[in-house]
Image (cartoon, rainbow, N blue to C red; front, top):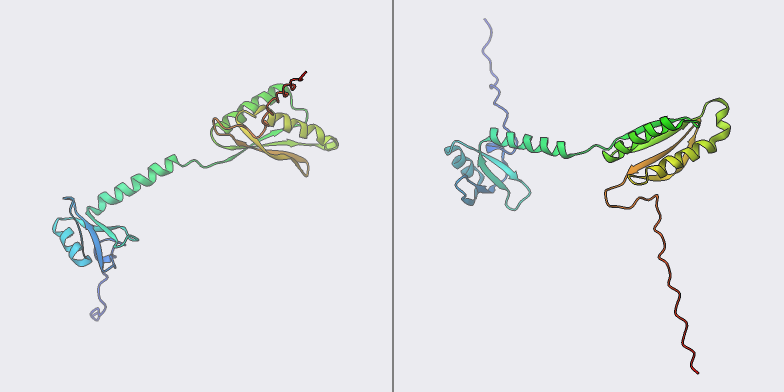
Length: 204
């Protein structure tokens, strides 16, 4: 025969900042009928539970902390919904890489330029890379000129970050999206034409 258990059964884990888990002495309690009252936390918990609701701490840093009487399951659902909506609105900026050769033909160039325009309009950055093979490394100026031309063709939607850089057998440049209505870094402002001063009248 097994000896009787001497340990206490486990209590259900209290949810943080809900009901008895609220550790502050008093709260500004908000109830469904619109009443707001500063009262001891245990009293606020009892009043919420008498309504068949939970007391949830919604503003722990306020003075005094604010707690609201509501259904905990409904509150969880609303919080998850808010997080989901915020995540949908959040855009993660990616770096889209496009590869060229020093002698890239016009058709391939236009194809990749159109891809770059779409990437930039979506709010992503574009990394244009020219790859040199074999003896092509002796003509890196061709690759750099290609990158500068590419950046210039994207001036309406993208702004170049620095000058083309050579790393090993690759030359690359980063192009960032330009917000609608803002001027590209590619284009310098044209100086205003200066009107020559009128000649002074000669007094006779």
